[in-house]
Image (cartoon, rainbow, N blue to C red):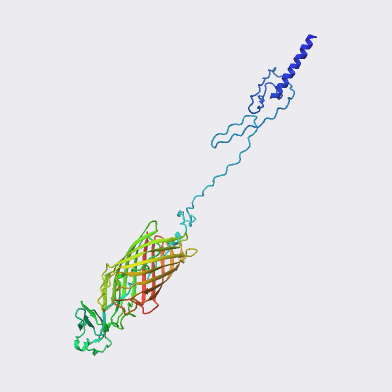
Length: 497
């Protein structure tokens, strides 16, 4: 009886221990030896783990049938620990619930590499530089303005005296006046027989006939002498060539540029419609050497021009001389991304050259300094091929005997060829208009300097090469009268550094 009670009590104790073990350990039926370690169910947060009772060893080859235990209590999720960038992610303990997946971090946009083969497509295996922004590509290819003026106004020059084959003076009679005493006399003419001074001074005409072999001889008054005012309509009018190419429009552009340049101008029949009826053909050859240096990243420039002039009239007048030096300055006042700009500056012409032509009617030698403030502008078409550029300036002399005048010039062009990769990068035909308006000393008979209103048109062409060289040629003529010349031919050579 006592033995039965003890057996019943042991069974009750074993049942309670088995229930407690089932609540902690999930045991699966296994064969001996066990194939896997028992899996521990994690306890709730902040609770110590429950002790695990080890299994008793079983005889080899035996199987212990176990009754399925009670399901475990649900486990509350633990706190989410923020992830530190760059720190290693801790391993998840076995049996823990999987952590929620983090959303993918946004990718940092990658800046594409610059295209180093623009406008080339790598067809020739070379790498081109990046294309310039805004209007830099167009403005780098603009040619210079040709210009129109050969030296300013006109002064009274030599008197053309016609002599026939017999050596007789036909006309006019070279009467001069001594500026100190006022005494009149007749100049001797080379190759002509002397004539009675008294008869000439009394106004008697010369008796010689012109004939078919008559020649024209230039006669100039000597020191302290001037021609009599009765000869004002007969003397020649010679341009102030010593000034040279002093206008801003002469081989220039509104954009500051680093370049060396050369200009050749030819003018035919100088003063033919301004001087007397017997003035022969006078030609002017004018060469100008210049340099311009851009500074401040191309925002302004300084430059210098030096002209050399030759006046040629067979049997009448021949003279060569260095002209006046002109100093130039240029500043960009406003510019947009397309390349349109407004610039301004000042030119200063200093009388450093020779001046062989004081007025033969007044004896005045005009040798002042010229101040030339100006504005320039460039307007580009939508694609940069068409363009308009021009200048507006006023020329102010320091000598009141000289002429103050306005100058306005417009240059219109279109790049019929525009190939930055070719040896010839641009071919640019142009058309120019130049208007010069005197504010004083207007007219052909103004002394000591006269200036006529002129409107000149030119047409020409520029060829621009990839290496920075450009060559241009143009022809023009005044279309208003009296015309200071009949024909202008211009050649320009520029080399941009």
